[in-house]
Image (spheres, rainbow, N blue to C red):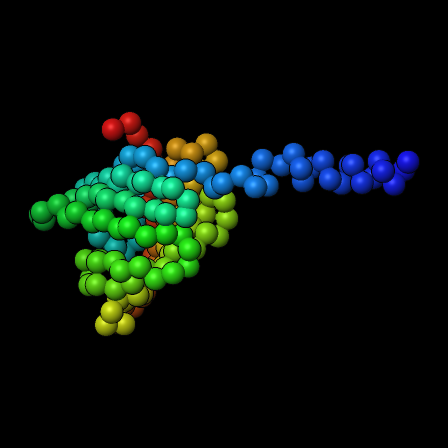
Length: 158
């Protein structure tokens, strides 16, 4: 009987855990950059940005717009998946390929490499436990050196 009790005690936490077999949280929605809560380090701070995400695990598609002072707004988009495969991507510093991998139920790691090999951008995107904040920690390696910054996006109604 003691063996059965021990077995039940060991299996209940696993069987009742909300993470076992549950899909990762849905990132779909309209996200607005909170410029003040973000940390820009040496990179140029934008006036604002937004991104609209369509997420159906593992597929991820997004589009958005970023605006800088004294410059026209730039649109961006992506369609791919968090499956470790390479997908084409166009960045302000050139065309390249990005790989996205799930690093946890609320975390995605991505690596972009420009086709000319001069730019490598890594990002870790984390969804807050309450599902209202996306935090992106980025590192960009260029011929001129390395830059790091953090972007904070808040989920909003469109």
